[in-house]
Length: 241
Image (tube, rainbow, N blue to C red; front, side, top):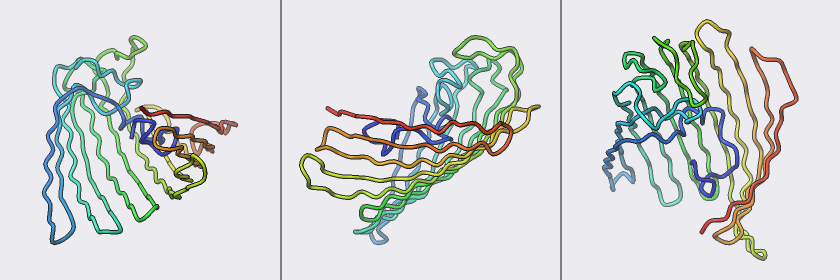
């Protein structure tokens, strides 16, 4: 959920940097419904210029290796009258888009789940990322870097939100939410960095066009970095037209 009006909160998860990029490519989607079982099976496959990493990590405006990155997801959903469950597994493989050598690969896999029941929304995701060591200097949005280390990251997040219908004045809905996240990452030849984050916030929808959000992020360094005072408080006002 990249768009601010669709996303419940303000800040992304600790793993969002690996999954919310906007690569250019083609995608195919197929969905098979099983009405008697109140369920459906879906398959997505795509070929893109780069990976799903955010552009601050890997540029996606061009395919430096000249070969596409292939990705896919298989999902199952149960759509009962009062409850919806979604489960999925996904994967990605292709050349690192900060390298000109297409033999330098990256791989990514993950699993996701979502439960919607009345006003309750419970979501979770696990992501595992691996990158081969580069064979030449690395290209980044900030310029060339002269050492392209191998990289490994894994982590998860889970979020619980509850939407309360509201009919006082202009307010139409209030949604308190909380998200717990964890990430462990390391460049080859360097020690790992492990962090955790608890995010607590509330979203207030004013009619159908305005959303007011406020949240508090509690950041904790678990391994590889000194403990510092880096909690964050954020406010956001979103207008949709």
